[in-house]
Length: 346
Image (cartoon, rainbow, N blue to C red; front, side, top):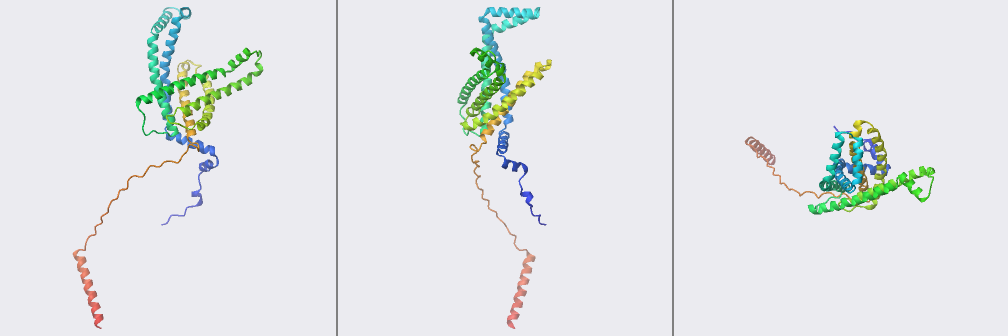
């Protein structure tokens, strides 16, 4: 039974394929998402989130140590804090809080050293995971990896550079704040800035977008372990910056709603920080996948070489004639010869 001939509708591409052919931006988004899924973007984003949360505790230890050094060098400020604690918390509980603070100040050196060592270890893990994730999104694979010490030294330099870039971006973001802009205008001699409120808000958003764009451009283009295209990174950083600003606005509304209750005040900031780190990591990795799937970076796919050919000889054995078959063949041959000889005699 023969199969029915294929109709023209069977060869017609689907709706998604037609949309991808008609809309180049949609095709690019789908290719970026496929690259993100193939390179396990969610897995790397979860790892980056883990090391981000883990690095906060040693950073808090370093912060407490710095505060201890500041209070130890300013006894008047320390006495004022003692007095405020005694007025706020009366009885034995206030004395215990003061003793705990004094013991923390006395152990500031050891706390700072342990915090710095732990923060360096957690920071190197965070940087290694981030650089490996970005390299995977770009499709930059190393056949031969460098030694352990060389890799850690490279990650340490990258970590320090990211710290410097973040400090600069935070400073620029603070300068772009509306209240800071109003203070600068007052300092320049502009007394009444009420008419410039909307203009300052727009300027603040523009400065925030510019700072985020610079930060994400640096992360996407300079943190992968292999050199990548700067032009594609700058384009992808625009997507990351816009998405990051939208997410910050939504996240601020979320925190205001969550921390209103007692349970939210306890667990809301931690959960919010985890969600913030995870979404930001996914946003950066997707933007990197978008940059890696631009036409200028999509080279020809390298197909692996075929395996060695294996030649196998097939030996086919045919069974011989059996006794009965041989007797029949001899009889048929004799009869044929007899018939042929009689015809010749005639």
